[in-house]
Image (cartoon, rainbow, N blue to C red; front, side, top):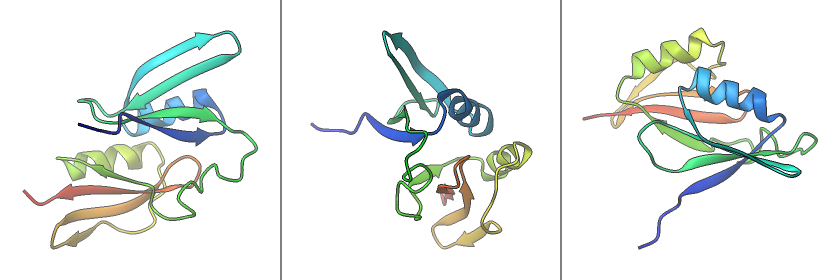
Length: 124
C-alpha cells in the first residue's frame, strides 16, 4: 500500500510560517529538528494525515505560487463557521464570501504568501 506522508511547502521564513500554520489554521508542529546547517519543520492538522515540510526559499518566485496561482490545498473542516471565524480573527484574506454548493460549504482564502486554499465543509 502506498500513501503520501508529507509534502514540501516553500516559505520565506520558517518562524513566520510556523506562526501562521499554528495560530491561524490551528495546525500542530509535528517535528522541529535542528541539525548542522539545517532545520526541518513539519506542520499539519491535528489527527494525522499528510503534513507540510516547510522549506525556506526566501527569494524563490514559487513562494505563494506553488500551484501556478491556483488552489493548492483543500482543507476540510467539520465546523465551517468556527474555522472561518478563526481565520478571520487572524487577519486571513478571503477571496470571496462563503458559498453553499451541492457538495458542501466552501470559501477560498490566502495563506501568508497569497497562495489560495479552499476551506470546505462537505455535506454529511
